[in-house]
Length: 496
Ligand SMILES: Nc1ncnc2c1ncn2[C@@H]1O[C@H](COP(=O)(O)OP(=O)(O)OP(=O)(O)O)[C@@H](O)[C@H]1O
Image (spheres, rainbow, N blue to C red):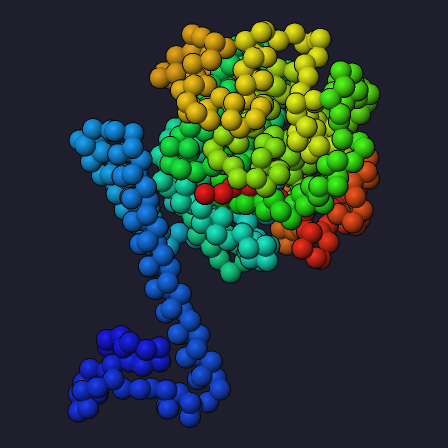
């Protein structure tokens, strides 16, 4: 059978030889029973989808090749080296296709402990039934993704993970789907995320902070080299391997900013009287928050990370303001994380997200350093040169090298950082140890998954038109649920 030009028209070899012209099967189908017609329509859909995916895959693959070629040419990499990079990409693409053809599915993995939750799903430890290897399985509910137009972003995440072969980026082994879920099978990083480290340690010594900021720079720059902007760099996306080296995760799911923060961002709000006004008092500074409130913020941050609302503490002002933005926005986020590592909380933290938002936008007035803990002059300078206008931000004009050359990094051996002993070595007993992750209710909440459990004064203060509460068994004591309209505060950032 050869494919004909039009849908529904097929050219059939021997049976059609007499006429030697396309044999239109439509009249037969039209006279057939409704069940047959349904089956034919379903078959047509399956074939069309198959070829659509196949062609899309080919296109993506060619696009990745072209991007790599352009990047390599721009970076003036010698042609021999370019050839090697392209061969390497082809090898990984082929390997990935081979694995895809194996039709790996969820049944190939034994699902173990839940280790994380995010905006659209959960992350679990899993064991490959064939090899016995332990991996991390990210499981995303399709209906949630579809209803919020997020499927393309999962594709981005999967593409990026295949394309960027870097020791600073979490590795992707398989991606597949069943009728309800999308799955990403990734390497398991048992050291826990930087958020957990910060919650445990409160503040990091400058040497430890320097190590993790330096590794974050290498990770961020490796995705920038492939023309990706993360937009959502935050401590829970920086995960440690068993030796304490850092890898960046979570690339694909875009939390659409427009819907997430629209209620926080109308112009009137930004000029409202509570906007921090640049006087010299420290009344807006996080450390002037009552101690109990600050503790509450710390207790809430994990729950916030699991929610569909997410956090905007690390987000650059140009992203919040929906101005044009580029890779520099990731360097802002890094500045906010560095501040938190050395000071103990993010620079614009507040128990009210509206205030955080305003503080970020009014960063000139609101970026302040406490008396204690005392930061070195170089550390302060670097933070100030990352948390500033795009035009003067380090990395904007001179790229990553400009950041690496800052005096705070004096003595850092950039080329051998990942071979060095890490600044902090997590305790990890065996491949499937999950002690560095929070303990979760092990019953999957994905069935009725909308958001995570949060019950705090923090949310009581949020606009009631934005979220509301609902008691829910197994999700005590409260669950944030979305409004049914477009203001649903769904979250997640990544854009190509
Ligand atoms: N490969 C991994 N190895 C170990 N832990 C992981 C891995 N991937 C994710 N996690 C854990 O699961 C948490 C949630 O993962 P991730 O951020 O990818 O999920 P998400 O659904 O994309 O969440 P978000 O709401 O942050 O966008 C992480 O903060 C981390 O603690």
